[in-house]
Length: 275
Image (cartoon, rainbow, N blue to C red):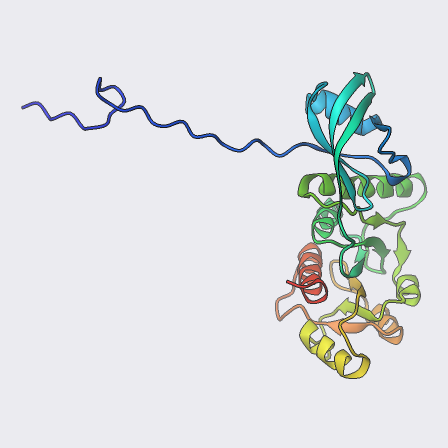
């Protein structure tokens, strides 16, 4: 016995074709132009950004893109001319992004492998203002000479690429490496935290509550130190405490360095910048 035909099948002569759904256009591609080269009357992408625009993203004259200067300004712009290694733009709509409500400086002990790349990427997405690679006594990676300069340039580029992808208009500064004690000594922020696995470590809410009783409102700047595999040495922790860093607990579980950085930045950003 033949089965009855199911209603609504596309091959049926009486089937009603589905309505076409119009999806929104994809987000415009973003490109970086350093603040020192930012001129709304003459916006020109060169170097790596021009290559990315023309050869990777295949943008052409007449296309609209987003250009940003890493200092809070972005412009929706039309590509009006292209030559090899250069893309000329005409700004159509300019907008300003306020600075993050709190300036957070991350002092991150350089981990092994490519984990520093991940930390810089995620720290940028989380709104950090400055990233300082730290060289601790337990740091496995050795940075010196020509390799040092190349690493710093690479890490700064990773921060820029993270801004391009996530829509962040403030590019954090990635500085040259510092020793742990030197970083702790020069930190001037009113809130100074160092992730620590120790009995005296407190969670961030407790630290802020105690600080509020002594110093008043929530701080608008903080320095945060995250250790390497194996944590900072007891001597490094002691020196940091002597310079006013409070031991910050990240919970009872021992976290990898990159996980600790992301978690610590998340809770610090939430408390200082608002939910």
